[in-house]
Image (tube, rainbow, N blue to C red; front, side, top):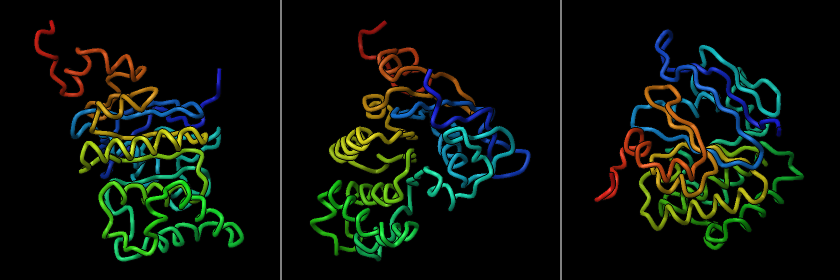
Length: 245
């Protein structure tokens, strides 16, 4: 059996001592997988992924990356350890140009690598390359999300984690962002994504974990969950089609 690249064991996390929002969640992610974290509003999805990223305090449990314990690693070191994170909001510097956003993200790298990595991102995201001097605040929602992903990829992470990458985007832009994530996956990067857009996420992902009230309510293959009307109605708020039993 393939060893997980990311393993979370009985994680508890929250914003106040003694009041965990994430309650004993475990997850093992294999190399090259796309895993989506789903659930109703307030289920603890974003808290869970932020805790892995070192942005929310953990009160119990462990997180390992390639077998190395990163439970207590501060957020600013995790990018160096192979974990990239794209927050839902405030994920780019809106007053700075696209190219300067990338340059700032590349500061984590040795100087000799920076130009090459920036060029690689502009190749991966040609829409950004065409307008690289434009301020990030003038980008469309989809383009801004692409820039946020590019910033996270600059350091060459083995795992890319995203918090609500589709939030506020039109269906067309969601499709564009998810198509780019599929392309990124084919470069060998493992993806863990929190999503409210269950339909789109289940189409892209290999596996899904459904959180309810901070606990794992269901875990399985994304295709199985997408085709199960009971699970979708119970946990994802998707009503069965008319005429269904």
